[in-house]
Image 1 (spheres, rainbow, N blue to C red):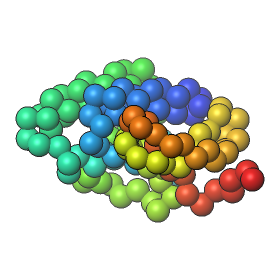
Image 2: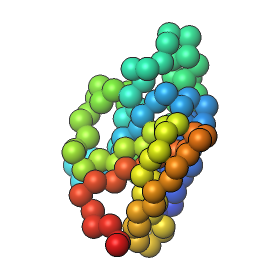
Image 3: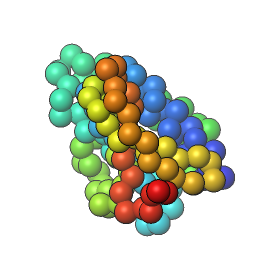
Length: 133
């Protein structure tokens, strides 16, 4: 299965989750060991009722990806409970203040943009990559 399509669907899922639950942080990467994307969600800032509704949504959405991609489907967990991500994993979260937002296009060209935000804006942080000047 084409990794670009899986990654695109994975990022759409993250957008959906972050819009509904802005207090979570998601880390993901492609795992050579598992031969698929792996993702872990930090839910430590969610209260119990919110965690329950998040868990139901997370399970439903991850099962949909499983139905589409089968063995190539991403693997999911919470708080790195079932697997650890590397220090190079990409972190996706939601913030209210000034942020550095790193966007990637489908050709993996990366550029850095400073944003002064008065509203919540999704933030993607990708370390250990060259940023265009």
